[in-house]
Image 1 (cartoon, one colour):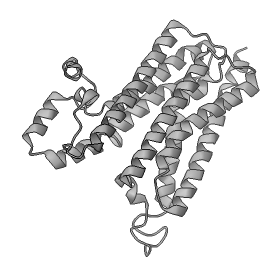
Image 2 (image 1 turned 90 degrees about the vertical axis):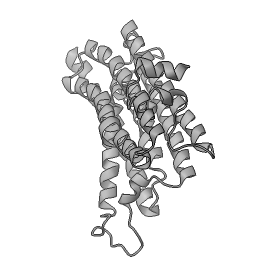
Image 3 (image 1 turned 120 degrees about the vertical axis):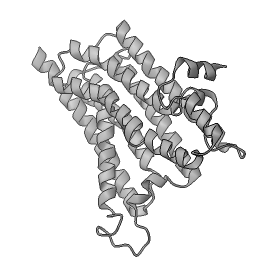
Image 4 (image 1 turned 180 degrees about the vertical axis):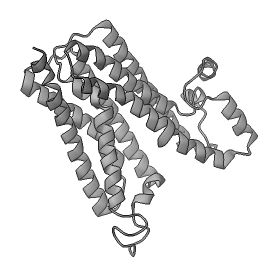
Amino acid sequence: VMPVVSAVFAPCFSAASKTILAVNLVGFTITAVTQTHKITDLCGVGAFAAGALSSRLASSASVGALSLSSPSTLATSLVAVWSARLSGYLFRRVCVVGEDKRLRQFFPEDENEPMFTGPSKFPINLAGFWSIQATWAAVVGAPAYLLAAVPSAALTMPTTIAFGIAAAGLVLETVADYQKSKWYAQKNRKGYCETGVWKMSRHPNYVGEVMFWSGMAAAALSPLMAANAPAWSLGICLASPMLTYTLVRHVSGVPMLEDSLTKKFNGDADFQQYLRDVPIFWPTPASIQRALV
């Protein structure tokens, strides 16, 4: 039985990866032709939902009908909600703000800059960015894509708790983005957000994202191990929250935002107190109490 069961995992993950690659290829083409990055997050984050759906279709073709109460169904539903919510939020934000300054480096400085050899290396570096984005979606979303291979797995208590952690992370990320948007819309706002959940962490949206993918990975491990999943699939599931945390905490998320805030408010006494009161990432009992007061 084990070789037959294990053989289902590769088609599910492959179907998701191919769909993600296709979505990002279309996004790259549009971006390169129009030289605007406004659809970057719409395609990059939206590809998660497309990948989850593709893995479900691949599973139904291999193992038959899918249970509506299985971990696979819950995983696909949660990823679809996370993907639609975040991609829509980021797309709306970039349309309001006008651009994402972090992506400006991938485009020519002016119409006279030569392709390939200019400072931006357009479109070579842009293609590299979209390739990394596709890889990110394939690896981070793996728990949902691989769970599609075991559509009849039972929903156990540990798996339910893990999904609860993922749902809590989704709620936290959503609330954080909503509160940040309301703060940003204020005409007399100060330079950093310190309302609601932003009192318990300087980056609660990223905390929520790490919680979401940690819960998803934990929910996937037990059903996959019970189905004799190959070692590579378990490894990718574990890599999902690890990659998420590494990216947001040490690469493209927190470091860039913290550097920007420090440059703006380094000499401000209130800002120094803010740094002491609000932890940079994981909430503490004291910061949680401050947020609830």
